[in-house]
Amino acid sequence: MKVTLDTPMAEFDREAISKMRKSYGEHGLSESDLAHEPLEQFMRWLADAASNPIIVEPNAMILATTHEGAPITRSVLLKDVTAEGFTFFTNYQSRKARDIQDQPQVSLLFPWYPMERQVIVSGRAEKVPAAESDSYFASRPWSSQIGAWASEQSQTLDSRKTLEERWAKYSELYPEGSVVPRPEHWGGYRVFPNSVEFWQGRYSRLHDRFRYNQVSGGWEIDRLFP
Image 1 (tube, rainbow, N blue to C red):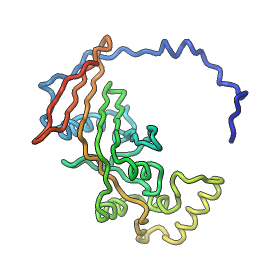
Image 2: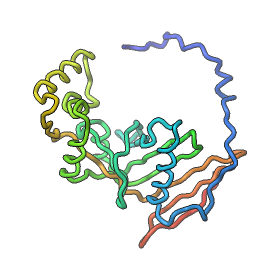
Image 3: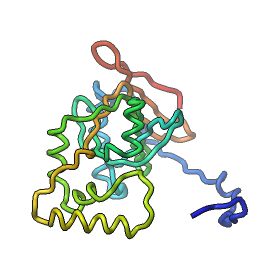
Image 4: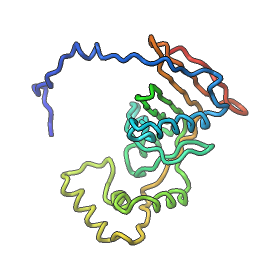
């Protein structure tokens, strides 16, 4: 579908955009609240997000990569957290994977808006061992396994019908109840953090921000201006 210059914009009160504003709460974040390690602090906040019924997918995160010199973002799901870092899975032929191959420095953003919190991770993404990808792929629902075979992620698709035909093809090849092998072009990445920032919204835009920076032998913590 092509959009031309004469395509009308949706009617909307543009002035209303500038007036969209939410006042954040009194609950803050202090140095004494923080864990010594950023991954421990992250797990505390992830547990809070997971127990909050308003947050639909607490493990959803925005992954930012560099594509031909320009930043690009998309949502992916966190699937593991270890002492090493944050793991997600994808198609290794997707644009995000090609971006990571060219420039492995990435950023992750966890936007827990109902809790007035966000976490920003900066670090290097590397493929996880094949055995780890095999183990996670085997744990996925059958329909998701077939979807990994059917989708040539990020490639141009001529129609929805083609996608559904590919799904039918692989669902016949690997019927429900059978063992579905992991495609070689599908697997995980682990993001090894070198900085992790925790942001807590506060009143009058006087937010609390703390950033863990990796240093020799551990982490140092800085409070940042909001």
